[in-house]
Length: 187
Image: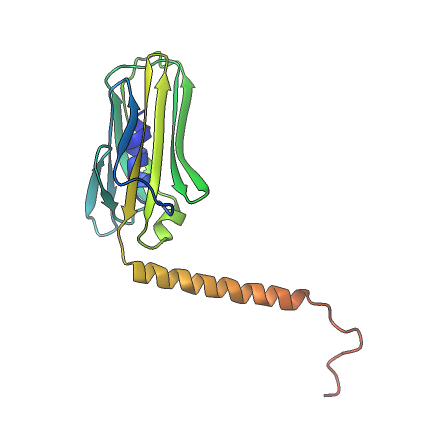
């Protein structure tokens, strides 16, 4: 559960191409779920995100430190955190099924923010997560935005697309059949 909105809030905070609801929405919580994540940028600035925030902007960063907890310990539990990018879904973490014989109710960790997410212009992403066990479950979603200059990342994206188009044109040209009668000699 900790990873649910904690890791997801942080990692997802950096992702979303599809339009998602504004802010966080806990759609079900029968076990008292809570989570936070801290994203630290290269320049040392940090943003801490609470899973109940109404709007979140995070810096471009390689990872996020997260903390999650449940008030009611669950057993035989599992969960997942995903980022939705239009029709694409990126899983940020899964756990379980596990019996939780230690009766753990908290967990901490670090989740890598996918490179794809960090390279996009400043856009909104949809983060979803859930944790469920024998004693109950919680689930929710969060809209996050990655800070940064949309112009610089858009320029890099345009340059990348131009390079891809040039490479594709080269492949098409190389794949075209050559005339067996043209040798290139005697011009």
